[in-house]
Image 1 (cartoon, rainbow, N blue to C red):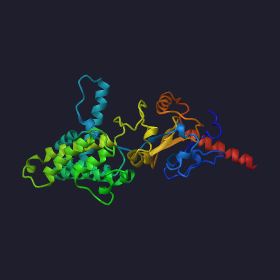
Image 2: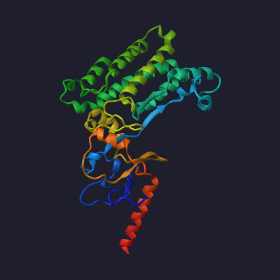
Image 3: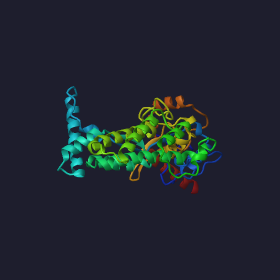
Image 4: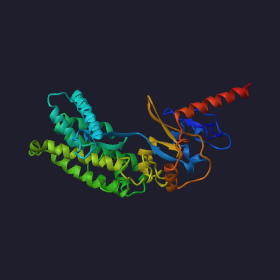
Length: 350
């Protein structure tokens, strides 16, 4: 494959901001920005901005519980065998992590929890994991309290992180000086009025609030319902995270009909929740971008410049679905372009 034309060379941008390129002349490309595909403040000035969209790539998910079920009778034998192999590996990992003495209950608790909510990487992921681990360890009351406390923490984060976008709101005078909020009903109302919470998220928060009030404040009945309440709290918390912070749950800020990937709609790039939580986890890419797994994690590979012009979200989705996979940027293409650039520079110097 021939080296792409100038300003269309395959480029990579490390997460530390290093871009392998020379400065462009006459217009700005991602190669000219200090952090390239991740230089979110500089993307407004790109000449090919209209042909790029933000692609989030940092997600948290655990599907272990799904592999613990028995295979269905109607599955093909090869599929059954593969599922059984994966199940045995999952059980082995659980035994190594939680011990063998009560492994039957560990497996049951893991299955009952269900898959961990698919979520963008944010402040809640680690605490969510700890609460789930407490439940699987039969520490039901700590798991219950942790789930409720994390729900309140998420509400506080949303208000504190987003309040400066809503200074014209009548709620602002009640929240701009406060450092925390323990009135869930008020917090949910504020976030709903700001248009932050997606449908059904506020309802789920209030369901979790009911569990919190019944469990954290003294209630003798808690002794007999700890596991049931902890499981309910964790499932409700997972639903909140999946709906609000998920990546493949039909959130309104993602372009439709882009199988296998999610891209932020142009009109949502400056929506406070998206700007604060999702854009920082995204690379600004054209449809022929590629992904490369390194020791530091995933990073995007892309062309320096897709040329002037603009495409709307539906056109972008169509171009993505119909892209020529021979043109998708790979590590080999990046290295080839770098060698060609080095050779050209040497010849010019000579």
